[in-house]
Amino acid sequence: MEQSKVNQVCKMLVQLARPKNILQLPGTSSDSLNALYDLLPEDGQIVVCVSSFGQHSPCKDSAWEKKIHWEVGVTEEILKKLVARGQQYDMVFIDATEKNPINYYNLIMSSNMLRMNGVICVQNLSANETRSQEHINDEMGFTAKKMTDVINAEARLEQVDLPVDWGVIIAKRIPVSHVTETTKGILADNVFRGLKGRSVLDRLRLDGKVAYVTGGGQGIGRAFAHALGEAGAKIAVIDMVLEKAEAVAHELHIKGIKSVAMAADISKEEDVKRVVDTILVNWGRIDIACNNAGINMNSASEETALEEWDKTFNVNLRGLFLCCQAAGRVMLSQGYGKIINTASMASLIVPHPQKQLAYNTSKAGVVKLTQTLGTEWIDRGVRVNCISPGIVDTPLIHTDALKPLVECWLSQIPAGRLAEVTDLQAAVVYLASEASDYMTGHNLVIDGGQSLW
Image 1 (cartoon, helix red, strand yellow):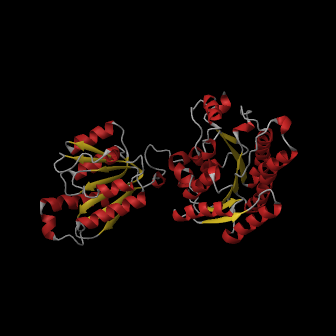
Image 2 (cartoon, rainbow, N blue to C red):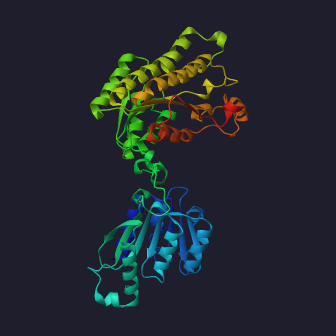
Image 3 (cartoon, one colour):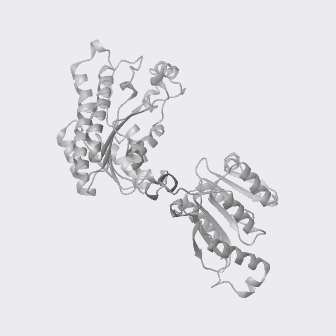
């Protein structure tokens, strides 16, 4: 295979597998480093093993140096050093024509350097059907042929050959669910195999699920919509302002996530019914109801107008109840569903020095509503939980007027910083997934420790 084609295969493989840590052994093309570098996440790293730098450049700039780490020396000694450090990799590139590639492979596999579901890409392999006898008879071809046989006989990998003249085998480490009950010394139960043969990370997947997010056009709701979509769900983005919902739905579309945008005032029963009916017409079910919409209007208690009280409760509690009830009816008929409500750490403490009686009281009501529904519906397959964020860093609080208030908040938070919306994303995925099936009526507090002081 032409080296440029090999590089293209490697690049495509990285795009599909999305590894974070890559190990590249000697002989594999360094020409592909630029492409692989661009495909790595911000905290990703490629470890490149070389006998000497030669024409290689150890670094190009600080960003390059952060992601590309060079190990110089004898390959087997480098591998032993990496093993001693406990290093593991999502993807490993090996050249089958290098000296001792089988030794490298055996050391990588026996030392668990390749993570579960990790991928090995072995280049310059010999395929019986395509490799000529002339090549097989030379030392390099013989080594490549032996490497081919070792990979093809490996029970710990599932592999595919690209049967061309200078071939590539792509092999993925198989999950432990393939281990038999009779394997010596193995208790092949759900802990070992994974529940229903699925790993913990697989159980967090939301593939095929249908979700909606109210207040999804900005802030926490936008972050929840992205998180649920990235985990595999289809997303209905609901917001008072259609343009905001459409902007987030467009972001999701760009990421390959099926999405739809709708405008609704959740304090109105007819709007909630329309949203639920539209989702059912489009996608036939609702698996995840993320009731996030809320408002906060600050005022001293003695000055809180009834209009402010009613407006706050109409959105934060009445609207949330309407959404829970409408989605819950659908889920109860399905026999399964996850409802996730956004409460606040104000349900646990009285945040200060700001004054927000209506908000605090409404969010305490969200928690009690969540607990009540969580106990009533779990035996029919519906789990109801809530998330209580701390004070979230948004552009709105970065004003001169609020600067003293922010400084006061920071002094009250053990974590020493405000929450970012990204701090909340994993929680909503967990509560939406089957991994949390035994949890209901729970208030998951994510506040940097503020409610503990």
